Image (tube, rainbow, N blue to C red; front, side, top):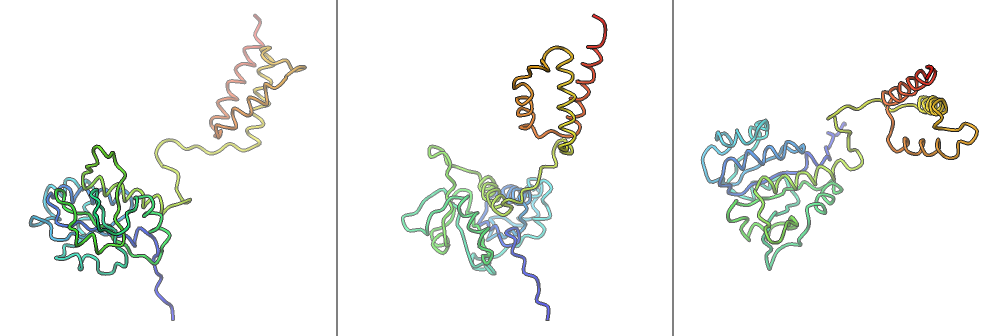
Length: 254
């Protein structure tokens, strides 16, 4: 008998819950924050307006994350929102006298990423009033974002973005992939780099910048300099082209 494969990825185990949200734009912005970090499970508890997921402002603020809105669910209680979860984390800037343990976003992200048995929810309250005490007291931890104590007011979607980002970094760990933004050339081989050094040394000798009989430490220092750059094949070719031009110019009568 083949057992179904269990997906232990934090991207599939983490749910974002919004309680009594007042602005549809904030719902769309949270959906956008989630999608940019790879999360997709969104649940709304009693949003304070009709058609919360299809409201034009929500769709506009989602800005390409409309699929998150389309899959989101609206429920009537926090108990319904937490169905299937075995861990809950409230997010609040306001600390309570009686609350679960307070934890920072980075710490909770590491805990959730490591605990593959945890199917967790992060819960965000109303923009103006935050989360009611009775919901906070049901949670395992209270996430407090260490913002400027003189002005710690974060927009709902900004808070969601912080949590989503920390969870993404923790989930990926050492598997961070190189950014596709910008040009990424092929790393030069050792043979290519050694050939470039020889060519460069020949050019420096030709213009009397380097004394072949008394080179001192110039070439080792140049090698140390270039070794810090992570030379790519095209960069090696450029440097060899410069050396080639120097040699041509050095042979011309002065």
